[in-house]
Structures are given as C-alpha cells and as structure tokens.
Length: 49
Image (cartoon, rainbow, N blue to C red; front, side, top):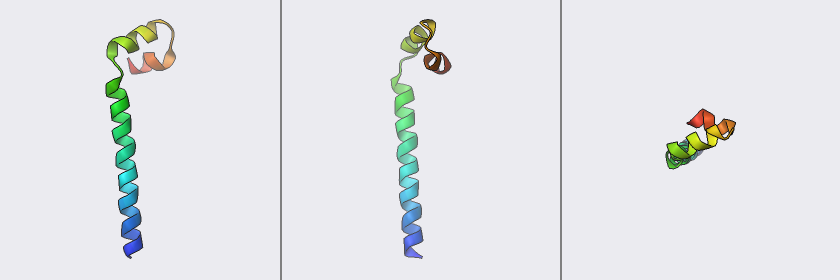
C-alpha cells in the first residue's frame, strides 16, 4: 500500500511540474511579440496571440 501512495505522490509532483512549466512558458511570451510573429506568418504564434 505504501508503494501505491508513493507512486501517486510522485505522479502528482510530475503533473504539477508540467503544468507549472507550461504556465511559465505562456506567461513569459509577450503578447506584442506573439502578434508580430503572427503577422509574419508564424502559425503557432498566431494561435497563442
């Protein structure tokens, strides 16, 4: 039973790290820069901006 709890805690830590990194990446990208890249034809930047 202890191994299952440990696995759940580790899975939650990895999930939290993933979502924290995603949030940091999105908030770190400036809106003005994304709009500029979108106007230059970058599809990914157009989706974000």
